[in-house]
Image (cartoon, helix red, strand yellow):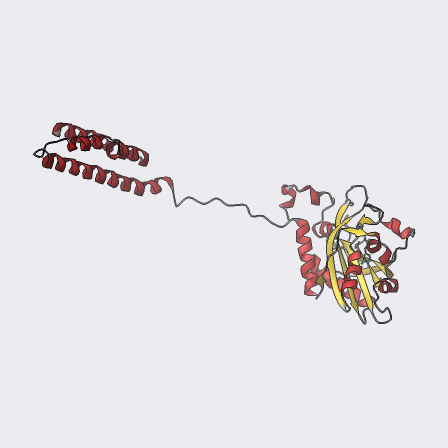
Length: 333
Ligand code: DAH
């Protein structure tokens, strides 16, 4: 038995010498020390030995078991220490993870909100599926009035439309709140317009409303001048030309000095001016619909396209580019 044990010891020494992975060491441990391992056979035989033989063989068996355990443990430790320094080079440059950014339209919306909030305007909201009452009637578009044809409407059913503008939020806000108030609202609008370089069937508008005991056209012009100068990050002048909207009287078409050029470019069609918003003084008929005293309160309102603001700011000549989501285009801004 002594000979057999020294043979086993030699086998173990050979195998442990060539093992160089943790997996191999684990197999060696199972092979020699496992419950059905090579050493267990000797422990079984040990039980059948005579009293005289036991002490000596017992000692050999125990010291062999200790030696095997110790050697395996030492080699596991040595391998564990060397593995990280082989597989990780801490001096390698890391991977750069591409950072996301706001979409151009989101950038515009954020900027518009920031500027108006800085001017003490609150943000208001309204539904995109609107009743005929809020989209038209309350805004002084009587039924069958030709002004309804100014906007090609998507009808949902007899009573509901996809809102054609954000102006209904004016009415919803006035119904909920008492004056004075300053609000803007930004959101999606829908019109049955054919898609081209300057029209989308789904687009976004910003709407503004300021009501106080004494506001006038000069205040409207002042607020818009501050807004556009901030938005284009350039001193911008405002021009108001007479226009018509049923819910404002008088009404105006707002133009701004071209933010790109000083003496004429394709964007302003060489005129130096760009039409950008609709605006006006709140019509007394609108105040009547929300039970505001038209003798006491005065207000101005304005509204325009978020996409148009974006196109002008960045000199982009086709509105469709904003929604194609080609990252090669979007990454430029
Ligand atoms: N709602 C108008 C449109 O979509 C834009 C507009 C014009 C809004 C004049 C206003 C305003 O608040 O006062 O064409």
